[in-house]
Length: 294
Image (cartoon, rainbow, N blue to C red; front, side):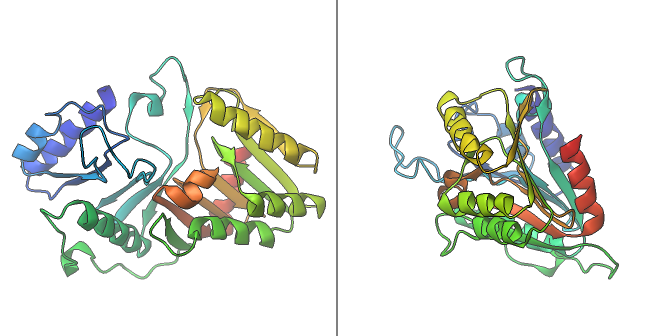
């Protein structure tokens, strides 16, 4: 669509300039791409790889294991992570969704190396024809300056533990004043439900924001069912009506927060390949809480 073509056109221009440009996309999520979509980009020196493509044209036994991560790394010094995919609907240009409410964060400093390391791991799994080596040039030394403490946390079907879910649980258990949660799909497992219930019954101000508009009717019905259960335990549930809410954020006590690709649902916890930033910084956490209130 329009946004995808604009982005690939820009990446093609950078490749022609001699910049090494790698594009990793989820095969199933991008299944409607025209066959020759990347031809000009690749002729210009760019490289692409599909994550877990179908082994046969009509059969894909890995159908459930999606690369849901959304990340970009520039020169090993600047990184982006969050909820935005590449498509016209994600910038509010599709009438059926209207305004698209999402959250991404821009990162600088040593944390960008963690982000790039995850990209290299995923790329080398998908692009055996063009592996990336961990050369020092891709991981430039950063100036030691003050900033926020943070972690890049990955989860997926190959991991021993559900690390993003466990990160959510630890944040919820440590909450003493407030929990602000935004998610387009709310289908948690028992551990998350119990943690939110316990926090609310213990006097923590627990607020959940979900979309008013449904993009998947059955998933939205399940979201509403779980939300109703939490209402009985004093959780405040808000329905976002100004377009579609796609942000995946959790803010605790105005002191720590998480932003990334993982929804608060069992698919993100155990089936998809997901990536979140966990940030421990009061200044930016207050900004995140203000965004939630706004």
